[in-house]
Length: 381
Ligand SMILES: NC(=O)C1=CN([C@@H]2O[C@H](COP(=O)(O)OP(=O)(O)OC[C@H]3O[C@@H](n4cnc5c(N)ncnc54)[C@H](OP(=O)(O)O)[C@@H]3O)[C@@H](O)[C@H]2O)C=CC1
Ligand SMILES: N[C@@H](CCC(=O)N[C@@H](CSC=O)C(=O)NCC(=O)O)C(=O)O
Ligand SMILES: [Zn+2]
Ligand SMILES: [Zn+2]
Image 1 (cartoon, protein in one colour):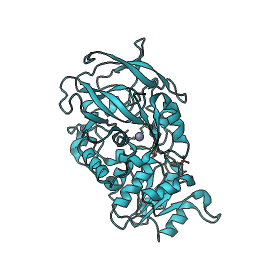
Image 2 (cartoon, rainbow, N blue to C red):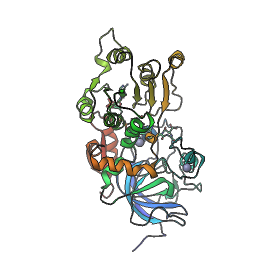
Image 3 (cartoon, rainbow, N blue to C red):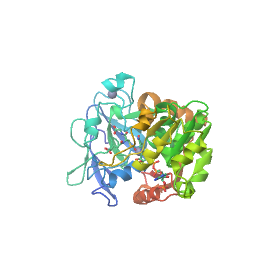
Image 4 (cartoon, rainbow, N blue to C red):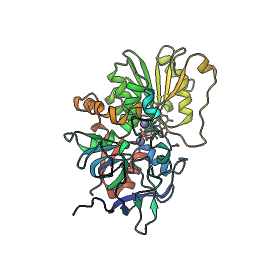
């Protein structure tokens, strides 16, 4: 019997409090209101940002909530006035919405959209209420406008994009965050050109996706910096030309001087994909005088601040940031899917494990163990 217009009881993973394992339990998911879409999530994966928010240091972190923002699934039902998707469409949830109408969307300068961001950061839908409840009716917060750690979720219509049914749910789940973020940061935010030199700090899914973006643009040197030698082989497979482990430098060397020496004065582009503010400083200072740009992708907690001597900027180095790789999810995801289909963009290669949904806490543990890129969860099991 169809559940359209009715609440659905399903399994979800609830973050009840910071730093505690998620509780896999039944919740109630209300039907979508106007301009909302209820999705049956098929595949989802854990991104480092889910672990960051679960750790309790995210100033927008609210509990209890349904985490998860890398996920894809099938439109189960739509609310009034939804015109961009229909029931049965295969979709990716987008934590960076694209309304096409707000000041941000119309600026042509950014992929950040203002339409739902304020309520998204408060863990509620645009009308200020939640569609998730526990069995006693108590509200459960949404997360990043997606909440993919549930068999069913509700998102704003501006927070999803449909994709061709010939593409499967696993790669599209990963395109919901990590891969798109890194690849976009390289090809869009930085707009790396043939011959440029690049250093990437942090060889997780985001960092290695920067690497493949740099490779696709013909960068002449792509240096990966990571403390974990287990990331070396992957770095080369995704396109790195060099791998440096700062722990293995000589006493007389530091990572900044090492990178400057390797690149005849510094890099054209560096990327922080660690979220560590000390690494961000090194990444900036390893840039070439006069033009080098450092792009911050990693997320750091409230209270953490970046520092450098202003002279570093006076002498032409540029500090920038990138959210979701600068990609506009609804109008540009199709291009990334084409890159995936043509083989330019590796996505499946990031899947280092698969688990049933009930093992979601183990998937978080995987992320903290250096031999994981992404663990994909099957919400039906
Ligand atoms: N701006 C945006 O739109 C987005 C930002 N993010 C953020 O990007 C970052 C990366 O995410 P993700 O790839 O999923 O995370 P991962 O945890 O998979 O990757 C981070 C990598 O950085 C390495 N690392 C940690 N500390 C250092 C250090 N001091 N020097 C060098 N390498 C280091 C880790 O090594 P080890 O294996 O030893 O832990 C790991 O390989 C996170 O901060 C995440 O929150 C993610 C998605 C979107
Ligand atoms: N609530 C967090 C926000 C951290 C952050 O910067 N998030 C990234 C996406 S991380 C994905 O894995 C982002 O896109 N930021 C732009 C935005 O509008 O949120 C905090 O306050 O730390
Ligand atoms: Zn993410
Ligand atoms: Zn907008």
